[in-house]
Image (tube, rainbow, N blue to C red; front, side, top):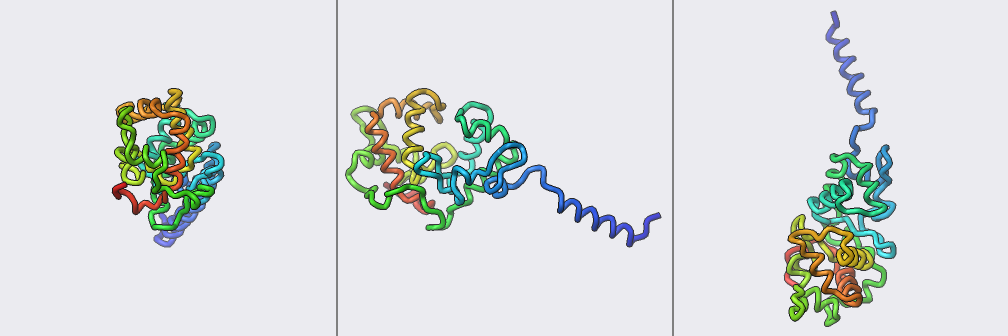
Length: 229
């Protein structure tokens, strides 16, 4: 018969061993910083140490994006409903729980003003609230071509609306350009109500560059969510 002291010792040993054993699913921060043991690399290698993205390479900003949106994209990559040579195998190397944990982790970054700066070279030299063609498209659209303003879906100053319409403010211009071209070419699903394929098809090459530059130059500060343009 085990004495009370023996039971206490066994419980203590069990807790010590449990603490020393790696978790079956690392939390979002751990995966972002170090990857997992099944082939998913550290997210910071491409998306920056604070999820700020990499403008020159076109890797998107993740910090502060809606968790539901990020999770939906990871699920789409894993199921090959959205394909990318880099992201598809990474998403497939993550468990369902890890994909959710990463989405929650990145959504929580950059909530305080000034904590995460956008990765946008020369953005400070651009006046995003100008009469540029990109600002016109983003804020007013081009109604003679039945092209709505981007902010009608993506929120004031591109701050994002829920899980369906992601924040565009502070995203690298090259990333936005690549996505608009992907919708034009039919290599990315058109999204809610099939809107993005229809919209992208109405944009010229110059339109794409102009509107991407406009949103890249905006502050990604989440406190702008809901502001009017």
